[in-house]
Structures are given as C-alpha cells and as structure tokens.
Image (cartoon, rainbow, N blue to C red; front, side):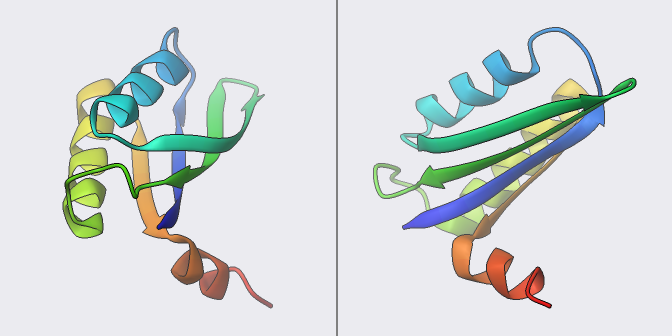
Length: 89
C-alpha cells in the first residue's frame, strides 16, 4: 500500500537520515522524496510503500508522529488516496 509522509519543522542536521532510518526499520520503502529548506524551515514529502511493514497503517502513523516529537518535527503519514483527496481542488 502506498502512503504519503510529510515532515515539517525547524531545519537541523540529520532529519532525512533519522526519518529514513526509522522508516527502513519499520519495513517501509521510500519510493520518491522531495525536500526543501525555506529560510530556517525544513519541508519534506515522501511517497512510500508500506507493504513490507508488519504494522497497520494507523500504527505506523502514530509511530511517525511519535518519532516527530522526539526529533522536534511534525511528521504525518497518510494513505495516498486520503492525501490526494485532501489536496484536490
């Protein structure tokens, strides 16, 4: 199943490394990634494949949010279809 992960917060060293290592440990494969720095703010969006994970999507979403709290970032994981529906004009 494909999902979208968004990461937003103050820029600091190691964000991509920490988030990608966390996802890899959960069996989540990153399919595509885009990131940018807007002055002091970091923004990243990833398209991921969760089919290799043993966890339900809701569990992964909760764990991503917890990981975000640990590193001082806002991290959200959503099913791809929900993300697309929310951003359709």
